[in-house]
Length: 73
Image (tube, rainbow, N blue to C red; front, side, top):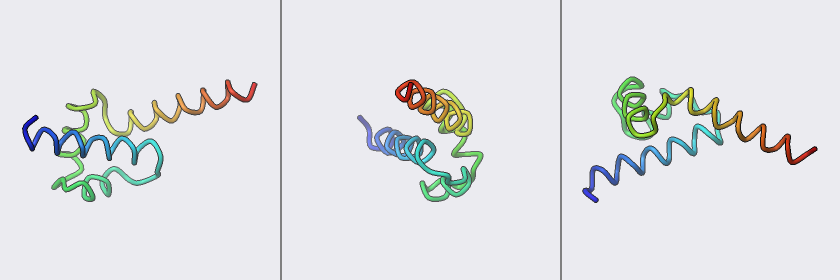
């Protein structure tokens, strides 16, 4: 795997974890991961993951909530 491909995938894994587990703002996350703008980060995230960062955050958290609720029943 080429180094830049590896770097981009690693950044997206870090982003997915932060969006799933934390309340970090997308703009702050973009900066932390080395993107020049929130827009550049969002475009790269959507290209790699298939949905926008906010849509990903909401979907994953909804799935986790549903799983937790089904375990409590």
